[in-house]
Amino acid sequence: MTKQIFRIAPGFEEIMPEEYRELVTDGPYDRSVGVADLGTFKELLEEHPLCAGCGLALSLRLFLASLPAPADTVVVGSTGCSAIAFPQVGLHNIHGLFGNQNAIASGLKRALKLRFPDRPKDVVVVAGDGATADIGLEMVMHSWFRAENIATVMLDNEAYANTGGQESGMSPRGAVLNMAPTGKKFEKVAMPEIARESGCAYVAVTSPANARRFEKAIRRAILVARDVGPTYVQVFCPCPTNFKFRPDETLGVIRKREKEGVFQYREYITPEAQQYLAASEGEKR
Amino acid sequence: MDSYRVKAGPEGYLPPAAACVGICLPERGHALLEGELVPEERALEEIARRLLAAGNPVFFPGPLILWDWKEGVAEKARALQVLAREVRAKIIPMPDYRPKYPMINPAVEINPNHPNLTIWHNHIDVCVFIGVHCHYANVALKIIRGGTDCYTIAICGEVGHEDAMISLRDAGLRTLERLTAMVREMKRKAGDVG
Ligand SMILES: Cc1ncc(C[n+]2csc(CCOP(=O)(O)OP(=O)(O)O)c2C)c(N)n1
Image 1: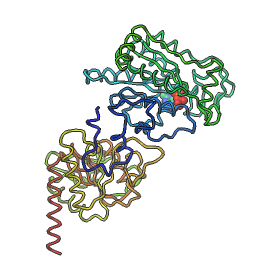
Image 2 (image 1 turned 30 degrees about the horizontal axis):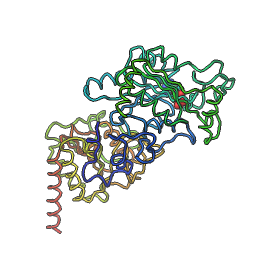
Image 3 (image 1 turned 120 degrees about the horizontal axis):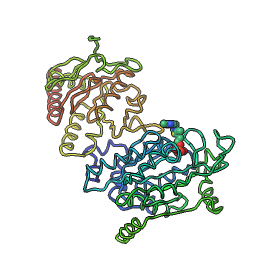
Image 4 (image 1 turned 60 degrees about the vertical axis):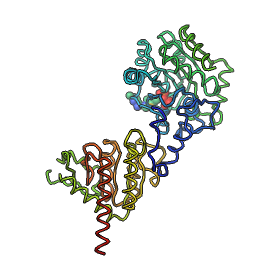
């Protein structure tokens, strides 16, 4: 898709709901905009029904502003909080069953390669921690073993938030949630390490508390997935509703964890991906 | 079962899909009129008549005609606007099929996932579907037949819709132009008489 086919038929401009008109005239399609330009273009997330202060909602907003080629991107999602926001997103997206998102993305990416051999299409999985590290883990890992050209982004709110607060593999040890009253008995699943050992060419751990770093991780993950191999980005986006802090404390919670050394920004890049990024980022400059 | 006719509702919650109660899609050159196969010309006349007699006719154009996505669409879009003006119809777009939280504004757009709102509190007596992908048109047409007394018309570019009270098939630019000409002719005759 290019902006060429994203045009309103003549005469219908007036009757189209405003948000579609704005997407056509001011959207990020075919333009090179990023998180630093937020506020100057029509964002891909119109409104959303997520809770006040939701770290995942903020991450989604930054994610959408970080896409290198939104007109040629398909997001594959999974059941969970992020899926509730996706109807409001001006981007191709597919909702998988809970857990099979990486399998869908694999098939989709292969089909798109055949259908558009000359135009790169970015397939990006965006799913919760439950969908990625628990119920979908087998399909996530096998997509990495098979070296599928897809980027996997985990929105890690450290719980099954959408179903009212069950513990997930990504909940920290000791976490007490609405439906996990006795506290979690084991540590967070070591997903970044699993990703690295399973063949991901680029792995990053990031958060919306640092928009620049966040953008860089998403862009790198998508570009490397396009040409080198599978990639993984883990986004720490705490949930005020289930972890019971005030909505305006979300970023503070991230910074506090960072200070305590429990949460760390990390990046792992294979030499091949390193070379590729040096070339493509050098080109941009 | 073979006596089922696709008439204006309200038929109640969950009316049957017309295809499940024996209504078949028309062959080329034919159309469906309340579930019966008729020559296309007859259906066009009935559409023109219904639109002119309507108190609040509304066109619901879908993505296939709202977006200028391939050759020929712009011409069809213009022809539709001419027809709408001729029968004094309002146009409410269906640009997207995804449900919108928390709600849509039914005066601004229609959406098959918001059935209680799709037909604007039953103030629409005749509606026209055009450019709506088949499966979404079928769902929405069935909901309208279930919950309102609106008379539904589908100007379909593919093989037609059993769930509309009148459905054309293979309808393109020429069909729209013929329909507009028919409307003008009827208006002229009515003027002659009156
Ligand atoms: C196969 C299947 N199992 C269970 C569910 C119920 N379910 C819906 S959302 C959800 C939790 C999602 O948790 P997570 O992936 O962490 O995303 P979050 O809501 O926290 O963003 C579950 C278990 C489902 N929809 N499908």
